[in-house]
Length: 223
Image (cartoon, rainbow, N blue to C red; front, side, top):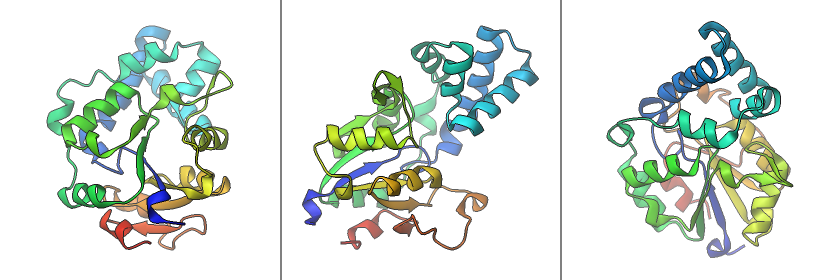
């Protein structure tokens, strides 16, 4: 396959920037606040419910929609206000330079809402390097929200982009998302620059990971 026919699907948080320092603690707190204030759970139960839905569905939102009847747009808005976000966003200049040189089409594929993605990309100064952003609002399959790692959504994204899954490469920090991508025929890259040591395990590259990198310049050498 020609490198210029390749379609790159980049995750955002902890792949292109240090989300642990910029937004993740605040988003977790905001989710707990939402469950407490809008659903009436005591704080400890709110945190337990957030974790329960995260582990069961891969996204707290999915569990809240299914079991508590939460409106997805309302939840996403209230949990991603994040005052001062732009000042905390931190990327890496070498990664940005590599992105600019990477042949093929490039898209953001994020389980975050579109408004948040736009703020982060704007703070990093890299929005112009992408052909589009596929945020959680666009991850509907037959009228139901299907964020990563849903294989049906990944196939639908490839179809929407008019490309065979085998021509797509998912660049991610989250292994379960890569496992789903490989299952539908996509190539996978495990980006580790922003991961804490405990998330870099296993030390051996899993079979469903095509490439493990600490810097995006490695993609320029991947053929």
